[in-house]
Image 1 (cartoon, rainbow, N blue to C red):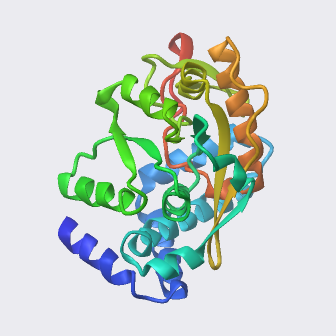
Image 2: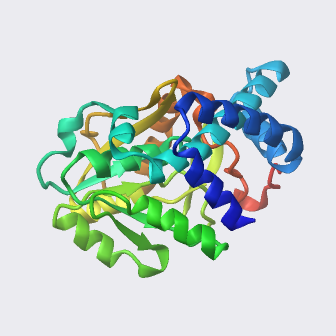
Length: 287
């Protein structure tokens, strides 16, 4: 089944984008209807983070979340197998792109919007620097190999396994290889801190603060937005007041700023993740 799925993904790279997006819309509705356990996670996350929304607003946002999730998943077909010129045309880099010029140590804060792989593909394809990121092995080894190959398609990119530790990442940062970092997930309480996320205590790794402090790197946010014509990858200005000596305060500030990014396109965020699974002080998980 995995080989069949990957063959279909490769074939979809040759379809018009409108067709791929249409299939994504259909797949999103099917997933919303069939995968009840994950639908429940999305609904709970939205209720917790947007308590002022009505039940109808939450359900509508949940359906849109599955829609964007499915479209972005199918887009990996053309991102990783499509024509190079078509990919570049569909990925529009905007904003403070100059922040990624030169060889200054740079940590890219890349939140878990559905277009995160489009953002990675855009910078590795269109910018001359060698970029790095951190990769978690997938249980399915066939799928794992496909994802690794896709993310290494452009720019001599380097993917660090989580088991490799911090030292090689810091070394790469210091020689001018920007780190594409996605720290806004619940990776377990080990080496994490509890800081507010939409007013709810969220188990969060303080890696953005630590990597930027240890390598004396600036932090540059990148926001990837799915559009009708592909993706808009917006490079924001480097944070001027980050990091500080307090990694917990830094991580709380990261979440606060992340909220402002999410508020601009709430249904493109990765709400399918159990963001509040680990709880402080013996609290009961909401799931």
